[in-house]
Length: 421
Ligand SMILES: [Fe+2]
Ligand SMILES: [Fe+2]
Image: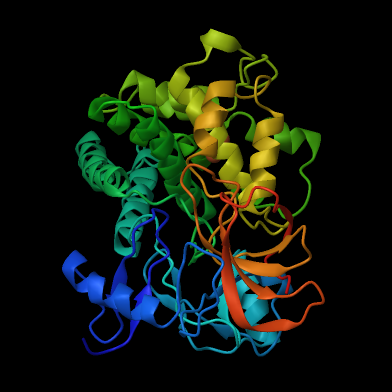
């Protein structure tokens, strides 16, 4: 067994190893000797045990709080597949500013206690890029329908889009891992396209948890992809305005669900349900939403799913006018709206679909110790496995150890900050 290996950041309890020399995932039978080697070296991921192996975790850091000299641990791509920053690049003020300008909210960095835990992407990068590209083509095609596109072209775009998202659905169904961070690993060329991909993935993961069949999942996917298509009719300067919108500007933005419905209901290859997702995704359970202020059961269940996914993605994304929230903060906001803005049961489903504490994030425990989240516990989303790296006095430990918070119920995360530590 040659070469180096890394332990994956998968959320289930199984080990998965990748050899760094070949980049291949190890088969189950090859994993056994690797696990044995790890255990022989004193590594035990389930107990509070110190270990001497160099099995380290890269750190997730808010871009706003990055400092010069930090080293990128995971390459950053644009939606179109261009490498913006390769791993190993050291940050300086110019690069940090460029990252913020590209709305990259967080980056994975290396520090001296950080090395090579592989953080699994929820869907493979190529698939995400393909999806974003297909969305771009469809949006441009549909928005310009009157001018230069024909129905045939639109039909082709939609067909392609559906096929891409069928693979996304397959991928999500096969993945046992939790949703880690969808948003921050990519520089998006256009917020609208990237947001549409994220809303679709969050909505699909909820719908899969709810046991919806493939036909429904495809409709949800189309609804998520096209929910904001009405924004193509809103002037760019209002859509991308940094800072607070005026009352009048906000009133214009609020027209996008109606515009979207108009675009989609005239499209024979789009189902009426998809059109209604666009129409209703800003409606709220208590009738305080827009455009119509409908409430309760008047809102379609799929639009209720989308409303949660939409808000969560919006508040966890970095925009020029505000900081992104970390997932546990965003989940609190979604929870605060459960029963009034959002369907209570769907919020519960959503809670089990996203990792409150993404792998790599730094946390402080009630014991005063500082650690890094290394594993997600599927049945206890708020209680991950934490690798303790500093004692209560802030002294770095020479022998870090792991604590499974789902088994140590007196321990609590009292602070979570991408920059702490
Ligand atoms: Fe919207
Ligand atoms: Fe949206």
